[in-house]
Length: 524
Image: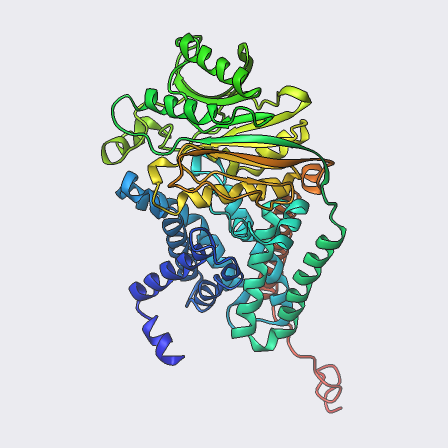
């Protein structure tokens, strides 16, 4: 231990250790998908910040760890954003600086049992505050939220139906704090063990008492994944391939067919020939087709990404314009300042335009669907709102072809499991080049994935459910509770500091004389 402490005395070595410690949780996400690793992955980072020689150094450990986490989580952006990936990771990593300081404040030194008990609530709340801030669309959205690592764990998905992915993040951090205490703060093992038992009890209670979705009728949805189509005239050739694959679904008694993001590269009003071909496909297959148009609009200025429903008579009029755009991929934030990103990477040369509202679409036989586009599936509030507005099936049209041979496609597909479990609604994640996936209302996979090497169409038989999950009804209560915890802790620390200062300034009272030494009664 002394040797390790001596090695970490070097600021550079300590910073490198913090970056590595921050990167460790990424192994819990796809592609490795070691979900169990998330429950202990923060321990090295916690122990490092706890032993920082001062609050400033602990904050720096938090920043370095956050940089490592963000860089590892988004490492697949390097071929596209190049050096700017490091800039973004450094800026977002700074959000963890206060958390590093908080770790030392709560667990540093000879932490008492009371302080450790408080840390089991305050530190997870601090982590959620960081996730809340970085979940803003302008900062990249909630990609890599810690709780999302539990997308394939049935008890965790049941918890998500109660408090969303935020409740999972809270509990994962709380368990990591408890384990760190068991390793390094022996005198406070009792509250640490109590925290572990409380987590187990919460999971058991959710498993027993959380309402399960009620299965009703089943719907058949076809997913069309054309695969990689590149080179000259790729938009035309992709449409041809999608048309061919869709025609192969004829006679399957389908309720809906879904194409991926940017599956149509032309505005349908400008290309009535494509509208006619889509309408013919709808008649041939007996199902409406949800396509995604990525093109300059003919009825208003700018480029939009839009989910458009096409029936046997052509576009039905149901259209959803993507609201939350990918920073740098679809627009450049503060382009006047950061426009140089287009010269060092594959940032958007022209900003896409935003839609202004979410849309629930009516498909044949009374089926109501809620479309989202691309990384909008990472935002829990969007799927929750669609479910509250009556969507019976959630849909995400996506394309990760730029990152075809990285961890990104599997990471993206896994998010649909969380959204399904949170809302109690089945979700279809349909992509151009994989990974396409379907999950039932419990977040359990339906059928098999269409991987990144697939160019095919597949039909999924999906149970439609009814009822409302606690998360849809209550919303982001876990985030609100965490902010209240931090506010209460801050007020308590403020009151404690004021009291200490008052005691330090109070004049010292001279010691009282005994009766024999009293000036008023000399000699007695």
